[in-house]
Image (cartoon, rainbow, N blue to C red):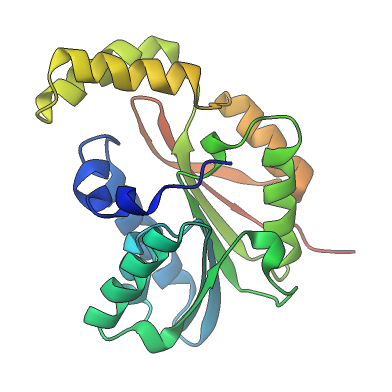
Length: 223
C-alpha cells in the first residue's frame, strides 16, 4: 500500500481538488447521506483519513458523531490533527497512525473509504481491507466508498479536465500514465464483487465522473 511521505501532506489539499474531479462534492454527498441516517450519537470509521478533509466534512454535519481516523502517514495525520483542532473538533476524533489491522474490533455505526482502494493490488489486499472494515461495523451499517475505477473510455476527457485545472499537457499526461501504470484501478463490476464478498451486498452509486465512482452500501446482517 502507498504511504505518503511527510512532505506530500504540505500541499495535498490544494493538489487533490485539481487532480480528482468532484472530490469536494463527493465528501459533501457522503456527509449529507450520513446526516440523514444519524441524528444522534454514532461512531464512524474513516480508514486512510489523509489530511482530515473527509472527517471535517462529516463532522460538520454530524455534531454528535465520534470518529476513528486511521492513517499510516505521520505527516498526513499531523495535518489532520491540526485541521480538526482549528475547527475545534479534535475532541471528537480518535487518531490512529497505522493500518486498520492495528485497530481493536470495536464496532462502528458507519464507515467511509475515500481514495484508498486503488493503492492496493487486487491480490487479496483489496478484499482484506474491505473485510477488516466489515468486521468493525454493526449490522446494516452504511459504507460510503469513493475511488478511481478502470475507465479507459473517459481517460481522454479526464486529461482535458486536468488541463482545465491549470496543469499543462505534459503534466496531465504524466498523471494519466501514473494512474495506468502505478494505480490498481478495478472495474466497477470488480468493486461490486469485492464489496459483496466482504459482506456489502446492496450497492447504489451516488457519484460518477471521469473514472471516479462513489458507491453507497451497507453491512450485511450477521446470522
